[in-house]
Amino acid sequence: MRLWRILINRFLQKHICKEATVLDIGGGYCEFINQIKAREKHLIDLNPDAKEFANPDVNVMNIDILDVRNQTMMANYFDRGFLSNFFEHLKKQRRTC
Image 1 (tube, rainbow, N blue to C red):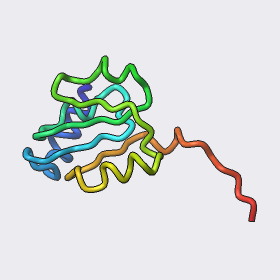
Image 2 (cartoon, rainbow, N blue to C red):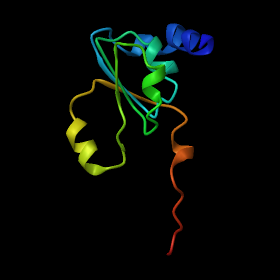
Image 3 (tube, one colour):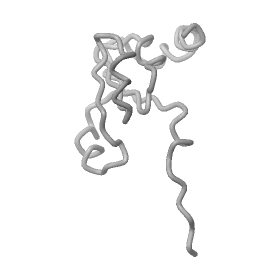
C-alpha cells in the first residue's frame, strides 16, 4: 500500500485530473484505484473478492474485459485507464502458421 501511495503521489496523479473518470483493469486488491484521486473510480476484476478490498467510492465490476460486448459498452466512458500486472494472466495461444 505504501509503495502505491508513493508511486501515485510522485508520478501518476499528475496525469489524472481530479475530475476524471478512471478505470483500473484487473486491479485485484485495489492498491491503485483506492489511492488515486478522481471524480469517478471503477475497477474491473474477475475475482468477486475484489469488492472486499475496494473503498466505498469505487465501483467494482466483475466482468470479462476481453468480451467484446463489454468493451463496446465502455469505449467512450473513461478518461483514463490503468493496467498493471494483467497480461501474465492471459491464456497463451499457440500459433499455427
